Image (cartoon, rainbow, N blue to C red):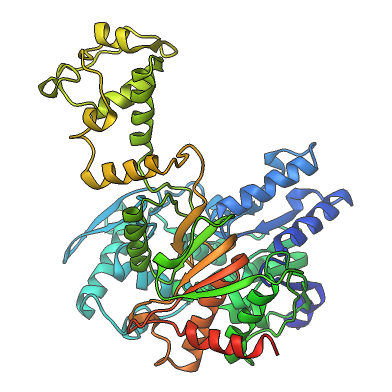
Length: 534
């Protein structure tokens, strides 16, 4: 009976790459609001806070009478659950370093925020534990299923027990209650105790990325909603490792609508992408969609160094795993290529570039702000090398908006009578690799004030993004080895590469290698060559 009710009020929107599924949801939201439904009666869930913020911003522009407070249920699923229990402290590994003690020493959970890494859980045991909870699986069963175990069974049990104990507090003698929640706890608590708001409309974007536990929350809200819109693409379901299960989306009762026109993918790339999905027939929602009216191109290379990055347009250089991404970065460092990651973090330290700019400006007779002078002083060598006094610099005399030229800094802030090139002034403070890399960039007349046209990251990181040129590296690692996988695991792997391929707006550049662990892009490319021009 419940399935019949859900089917009657649910529309599932399957949006292949570039077909604008988020745009279609946004159009529906605006239509509902203009026809009398207040946004507080609409729940809109997306996968990231960034995506939610962009949606709300676009709605406020289109409907200027609305404010941020009018959208209480426009959020991620985790943020929604968190709001229901805001009085309880939340453990946020993306923001905080969390430490607790077990029988096996100090356990740390944190987000490493550097250019190299964006992991949330850096503890293997807790990653497996969290995945088990999200998939509603017994943690010990999840542990046993791991091919490569980083800790013994007894260690795994002890770490989990210590972690749960860490979240408890003694409220009275002999009585302990949960005092802290993590993100998964919040969802579990809402499912068990939360009150679902009465909604006119429930919308979920990127539905293929929801875990079974998150689907339980959606089901609770769906029962109290008049209309339900679920949007996603099962062919881009690439977060299975984190507990996501696209089958829930595929089999959720409801009417199916397929968006059939891609505004991104050219014809050749579209043809190649469909060859990738061919082995998944019967395990996916069958859908037909049309490419852009542009042929595009596909090229193959034996090495990344053969790719011409001077071609017009933006580039994405994509790897299957983070360690390959790091190898690519090293190659580009050596070549003096300017790049960034999908978050916009540049391939050099911004502070170093700011110091160089400030120094060069001073040497040219210009003036710098107090802030710019402070940044430069951090890198300028001390008196032993003739550039500034070793005494601490006092800036209390200066107004925050005051500017300084070379002479003023020499007379008032310890700068020595020694003009010269930034390479000499900053020699000790720059690592040799950093210095040589910046020299190459500047010698190549790269404008470091602008965003890089080359983005280097993993396929998972760029999901939802696009570029004129996509460079795809076939090299992988042992978990991603394709040939020895069973059919279900092969399909999961195909989805990852399909997602990478379909970021391309104009050209796809395939790097084939003979590495032991590689995805057989060459095999699919040969199939493409044999069939596209028929």
